[in-house]
Length: 55
Image (cartoon, rainbow, N blue to C red; front, side, top):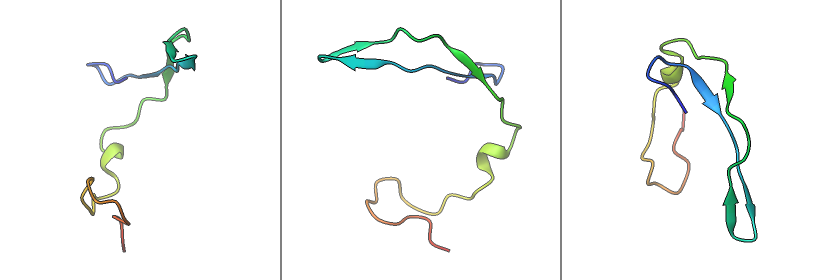
């Protein structure tokens, strides 16, 4: 999850017999610097099932 002020948190859950248990705490992750999320240009269609990032 990314908060409105840019902090990043992560949690996880488990599936037990078809029931999703979300019982883990949220843990703050290292906040990325602005622009680092766009460091690699997008080269493809997300709906394409094959290789999308050819050089």
